[in-house]
Picture (cartoon, one colour):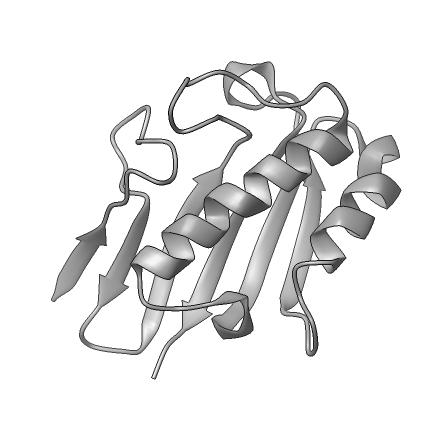
Amino acid sequence: MKEAIQTSNAPQAIGPYSQAIKTDCSKLVFCSGQIPLDPQTKKIVGETAAEQCRQVMDNLNEVIKAAGGTFENVVKTTIFLTDLKDFAQVNEVYGAYFESDPPARATIQAAGLPMAVKVEIDAILAIK
């Protein structure tokens, strides 16, 4: 019914969750939120929200690839920011990862994120 997706090219789960779940009852893949952790050093990458967003998107890309997709398959994302003042710089970095037809998206200011990071992003993919 479902398959956990796991790749060592993105940070391992730091809690009771999978990097992504692929279902056989539909063509959807649900990717857990990624934070700006370097998969090898397990350290936060970047001081600014833009720098952190770049690492988040790179981590998300690795999970998406492990599930058999690309950013073209992303149909919905949620961006969590600790400060909505960072929206413009995050939006610029995020937008560069989608060449055309960007996915539906929600952006939310969170009171806090794991490991005190500035940005977390999750995704839902539709894969043929």
